[in-house]
Image 1 (tube, helix red, strand yellow):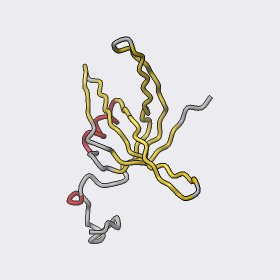
Image 2: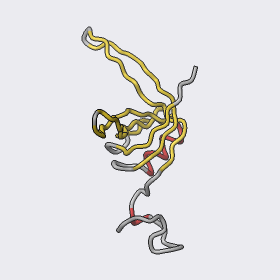
Image 3: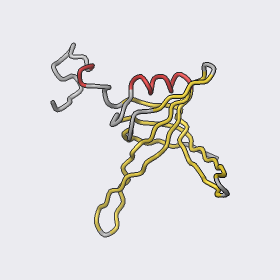
Image 4: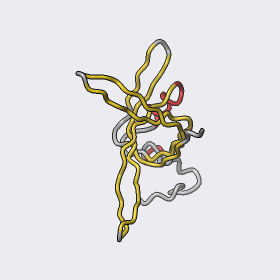
Length: 122
């Protein structure tokens, strides 16, 4: 069996980090475009909940914020809980690898090689 997911999207809000006895957990939501065709080309957006553990969580908190573009490789995890007699199901991505695809801010972009080293439209 294979449980593997690869997505590219933007954070919908700043990540939250939780720490307990030296263990770290970051949670965030990712907006991912979904294209489909029904008579004409359409586009929708899926909002995926993600969580990362350990040093990944600390790096996410330090370098990412709302609107940051990232690529994620991970596994889908599902769980359920009961609340007031109703069963709720949760599906999340457990992050294995994350690539930061946009700089934290334009002011932190190095200009050592050229005035616009990563091709941003200013």
